[in-house]
Length: 545
Image (cartoon, rainbow, N blue to C red; front, top):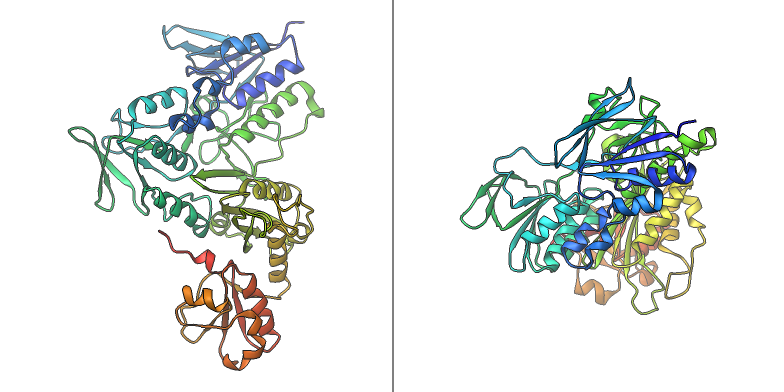
């Protein structure tokens, strides 16, 4: 029996994962990998950190080379080789050797497509200037390093995960950095309130942020570029980094007649098969399903890509014994200097845009016991189904412990847990590591209070002058940072001062973090007041820098 011929188009995460798993399941298969770039498998998430020098050794980013793939996995990896046509009927692929231009047909029994996605480049004047860069691979990284030096001015277009990482690392390298963001705040994957600490971190390091604006053209100056913004502002730049999203590399699949989704991604089933059962696809170019609602989704992250490649290989060799790909959550995190922020599952912005019913709970607490030195504030938002209490998503921001909370909540969402369940999660506790009631537990408590009608919440201070604002913080704190138009009655003295509050007018209670305003709202409600509590406290209302 002839060995199975496997052809893999694209390396990096999904393709390399597929090839490695396939080899371990079949020692005799002929596995050939075609990669258009210079590097067959590399740590693309680490690229910004070598630009800034935080990762000092370039070699550690090259996860595999053609030589190591041959030695370890007996995979024939061909770099600088581009797949240009798929003949599905005859099961072969036309490939071109880029250095020589020589073309040949390679046959396959099964084909894996993992071409990834390309950075989006706007069709605007001057965008082809060599000082304007995207970051997709090691060669892009090398060009950016060669074109940047301390003292230069850099403009980063786009403030998503990669844009923020590049801004931080260029600043670390000594460049003066400006960010242009089309939306109202950085990191559009989270709610605007959660993005404020990131923006404050940028401002504290001298990085200028231009929100609700975009570059409309680039002009070549005498010694540098000029970025013209829609607002009429102009920003000089020695170097520009474009980070405005990605587009799936699905042209090959489209021309082969494979089914694509609305946004051009390759549609696959739960075993990563395309509309042609002999062709699998995985990674940034594919459309899978959302793990919460089962809706079509495209998630461009390394973790899902690796696992999708493994699922495809399992199905190819194990058949019905293979476990299907369960869908993606899109769990992601970014660090901006000392601040980290991220999300998992459905974000509030996405739920709102989709018109799906949801409830939101925001809490603040420290990442480990408050009495142990070094306690740092965590702001946590959970999204949940108002009918069933099932967790739908979470967002978190703070200086420490953010990854831990997102990981726990990603697991909880995967397990289809409810707000009642997370009240009783038993998490690791010792003063240096956590609290007896973790901020996740507290989020569950607060959400259950909302669902059970024990508290009504608001996310902002009232604009109606007839609403009474009762500041329940201690007097020294309230006097140091007064809330305009409020009356200060600290929680311990509230029961003795109910006569100072008009029972015929609605009340909003406020405190620093939201906990004491909840306590106060319970006192007032049980004494006949129409009261609402400020969710997340005044901390959640910190103004943008």
